[in-house]
Each structure stands twice: as C-alpha cells, then as structure tokens.
Image: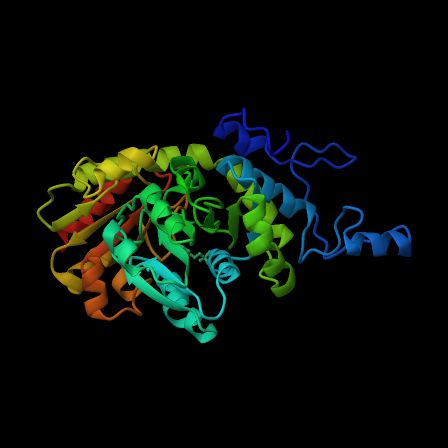
Length: 395
Ligand SMILES: Cc1ncc(COP(=O)(O)O)c(C=O)c1O
C-alpha cells in the first residue's frame, strides 16, 4: 500500500502503510540491519552517490526499514514527508536547529518538557538564537513576543505534565503572520487524537519512545512536514550531522505502530476511568484530564482533539511528602519518567522531568510539589484504581 494512499483509515494505515516487500514477499516487515549497500559497478556507485539514480547509499541517510517507518508515520499523520531520528530529543533539536540561524529568535510556550525547554533556553543561545517563553494558552502573549527576527514558534499540546491544551490553529496563524514556522511536539496527543499539520502547523515532532513503541523497548523520534519543509530544514541536517534512527529500532517501532490504535483507545478509556474515580477525592486538591468538561481549555480540546488523553495529572495534598508517601505505597504502578507504555506509570515531575526549573518557574507552570502524572497502561482499570486509592489512603 503506497504511503500516499489516504483513503484508508488510521487503523488500517497503522498495519499496512509504507511496507516495502523484498523479493521473498515476507508478511512481516523485513529488518535490514545493514550500515550500507554495494553496487554493481563503480559507475552505478557514482550515480547513486550523486543522486542521478535513486537508491540507498548509507544507513545514516536512509535504510529500507527506516523508510517503512517514515512512510507509515507520514500516512498516519497526513504528512508529505517524514524523517526518523534516534530519540524524541533528536527530533526536536533537529527540527528547531534546521529552521533557525545565528541571529534568529524563537517564541516557545513555557510549558515544555524539561529537555525541550533546555534546548530553547540553554542550547540555542550558544548558536546566537534568542528566545521568548510565553504562556501558550494566552494568544496575545504569542503575538506580543514576536520580533523582527522571529523564525520559529514551538509548543507541545497537551503539555507535559499539566496537560494544558494550546489552540494550535490560532498559534499557527500568528506564526505565519510573523513569517515564522510552527513546530508542534505532539507526543501527548498521539497522531490518532490530533493532527497539527491539518491545524496549520509546519512541522510535527514525536518521541516515538512513548506511545509509538509503547512497550518500553527502544528510543526513537520522527519529524513530519511537507516535502519542502523536510527538504529545506531537516533532510540535510540529518544526513550530515547524523541523529539517525537505527534500523533495528525502526523495526521495533513499526511493530509498535501495528497495535497503536488498540493500545491508545484502551489507555484513554482507563485514564478516563481513573480521572472519574479520583475526581473529588479528599486527598487530592486538583485533577487535570483533557477529556473532562472541567478541563480549563475544554473548548479547545473539543475543537482540535478527537479524544482526551492516555494521561491524567493530579495534585496530592501534603506537597512533596504527601506525593512521596503516595508513590512509595503504590504496589502495581511503577515510578518512572516514561509515559505511553503498556505498563501504567507515575511520575513526580518536580524531582524528575522538571527538576532543572526553579521553584518559581515550576509554580508559574502549575507544577506543585504534590503533582503526580499518571500514564495509563493496559492493565485492568479496577486493579489500577484499587492501587491508586490504597496509596491515597496512605497520604
Ligand atoms: C513531550 C516530550 N517531548 C520530547 C520528549 C523527548 O523524547 P526522548 O526521550 O525520546 O528523547 C519527551 C520525553 O522524554 C516528551 O515527554
């Protein structure tokens, strides 16, 4: 099935899109674990290297297993082109650094995953790229932050870990009026619930380490956009600087994609059930779930997302002590920093993903010391709710 075939629904694309069958006509995608390729003649080698004839040259640039993963992701996202990377952070860094040059300026939402915020605040300035961080839910703040040299806007939605939802279409309009490109980190929504390119974004990035693998096995990332965006801003950066995905990990991610829709659907139902069970609990002072009508941006969720999320966040009373007592009492749910996994996981953002921020910066983002991020897995929801309620009893 060609990647460009848009007539199939997402569930079908996830299983079939982008497959390249070898002469053996294998059922499952082949794993081409090779760094390079051989040529029938020196002339053919020369022509392949110069691009006069198409074909694979070196796996830092491209590889058939990686192509299958890229084509499947492009079909799913409705993107013209995709490039895979070794991690989600490689995808974010490559996309941003591909767009900006020394002397440019970036406007980004404040509520970013810790490493993404580090890239914007600490890494880009080393190359002469300045930035302004804004409250992503405040559209006037995006407009007011624009400078003559603004070349990129960057946001994630829903945000990690407070699950704020940003109006992607409105921010895209502001970016384009300023002559800037909008890059969206779509990890929390997954391509099944939100399609930023259709909403006006120029580029979408994923940590494939999360729902796309979804079984805690490998790291990976992917960057998606128009053919022109990928050629102008991404293709050469990956080819020459080498943040490339390994073919083995691409194969694992292809297998992960096959089950993405059933996993995400089930995880969302579980996150919903957990949010309903914890809502109003006397040991919790705040509960945030994008699928609920009391979510602060419920209208934006309705406008741009197909469903809520596989995650919900809540604030346990008693600050860090309360949160740690809760975490240490859990029996089934693992304490970790990953998300989107078959196993349900909890994270304490203050001491892990967002520990680099100052207390004042965390307070500004609503990341209190009692905040817990819960990522729903595939267990029976009642077992998870029993585990969570028993741990809350200990607070
Ligand atoms: C929203 C978001 N973006 C990017 C990343 C980075 O992905 P990776 O760990 O695959 O580099 C993560 C998680 O780690 C994340 O949660």
